[in-house]
Amino acid sequence: MRLLIIFVLFFISCEKGTPTTLSDEPPTAFSGTKNITYNNIQVDVVIDKPALKEVDVLIVFHGTVLYDSNIITAANNILDNFKEILNRDDMMIVSVAYPGENLLLGDNIVQAEAALLWVKNKANEELNITVKKVFLAGHSQGGYLVTRLNTMHPTNGVIANAPGPLNLVYRCQLEESGQIQSGATCTKLKNVYGTTSVNPTAYMQRSLLNFTTGFKSDILFVQGLNDSPIQMYSWPTFKQDVMNCVNCQNSQFVEIANGEHASLFTSPIAITAFNDFINSH
Image (cartoon, rainbow, N blue to C red; front, side, top):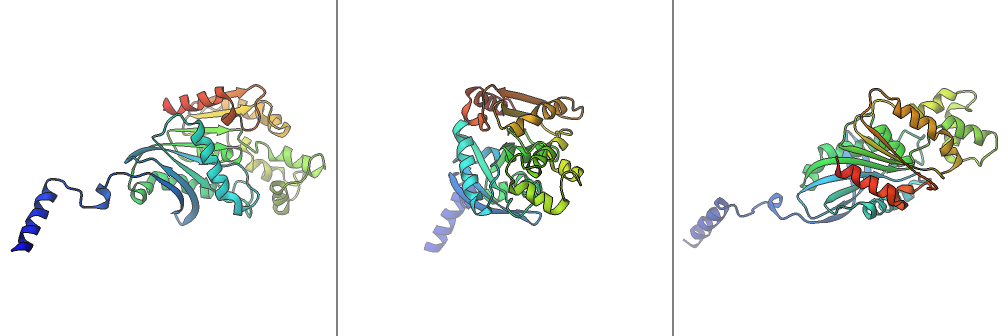
């Protein structure tokens, strides 16, 4: 008899809508690292989720890291940088710890794409949330990746700060001639393709100058005009090529006079443009 009463009370409580599953529990905040998989591609992401059931998502990408042992640190740092300038506390930020040490520049677009598609198609179930809008944002090589992703998949908007490398032919020629110090990016390309004089096409195909058309979503570019000479050498050409695009969504350029490489995070003008862009989309 006692068991029957308990069952009846339980049935009545369920009928009244009392939460009985984990999915019905109040949303909680979450901060931590998660290894995600999409289409058999794995990548680590650092997630900062507010205590909300429905969220807009900002997916962010760090700049170049020489050793993959440091990419989780880089992902945490860039998450903090974007969180500091974001004027909202209701967005989930997903920072992608994409690899690079053992890859040619640009090959990590595979991991970058996997992270984007995971957020779009699997985060709802795996994090017990409802993803609404999705934005991409990246700094330096991260800006390179989000610009390329914008030629592949639509989102609600993209922000790229000092995206590059813009022109690997120019950059790697300087290294080959000894005008600047050799670096890992050009050395790895040279080991596969030979020098820029032997195979310039291979270098240009991986340069961001090769990805200036077909933008599927609106994009905001931020560039400090006191960035490195290598970046600024090709910036006017890159900007003009994007402005000439006839099959792109809207592109916006914010150039910061005397701004350095990280102008998005230091310039009030850039920070305002960043937030206005997100809030208007």
